[in-house]
Length: 303
Ligand code: GUN
Image (cartoon, rainbow, N blue to C red; front, top):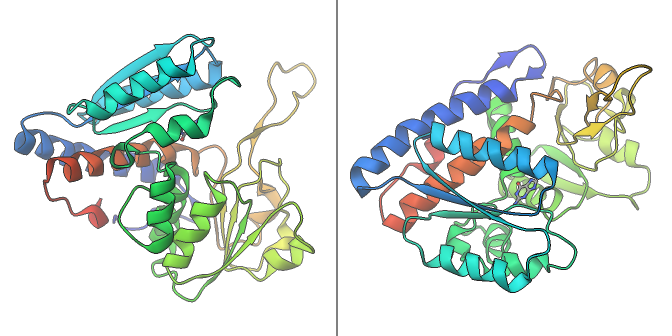
């Protein structure tokens, strides 16, 4: 782990992600020498969703910039589920492919769970396969979803040991809330997972040393919900309605930054906090997969 990137209470995820990518590039070059090939990430995009296209382009560029191969597969929005499953099968069998990511969301006629289940769990760098959620929950090595793993890296970089801290996770999604809770529990935090039916949410959050907000509701968490000095990780990316005359609204998180930053000991901004971590952790997971699949040692904890 690098030294903490300290900028007052602000946790600079952009700088942390850059430093992580630099470490990945060094290890990717060593991998190429030892394995006689580059590590490879395959990304499959179905349809033309503009946000997904931006994500996929960015993933491809960053993969290549870190010295790994990027393979892109595009299918039309009306493709048959079988055609997508055939591609996944080919990627499972391809020794040049260490990591497979099927960009979500998929069109409604395709069963997302079925597609995720078809990915070889040892190439599932998204960490979405039930085998990997099982491994996470029992503490076996596997792959952890990129966003919560990125949040954990930021927390450990800022706080050091998390042992014994009270953590509140707001949101119970399979992609962020549940794996985040499992990761914090593995760090010996006392973890509470809250959701839309939680009673007295503000009171629950007020007990937390660590707050991870992942609900998708703009600026929901207010300053008077926060224990003074708490570390606040904001996973939300919400666009506000445009102000008069503007063509786009501002991007904000699930946390009301202006009020929470007055009270918190540390806080991730939006943008520039958790967001930049997600792709960097995806590249990390791909490099880890490449080492495991090739039987080459890697100090995963140092990455
Ligand atoms: N769509 C938006 N973010 C992600 C991600 O991290 N993984 C996948 N597979 N799809 C996404």
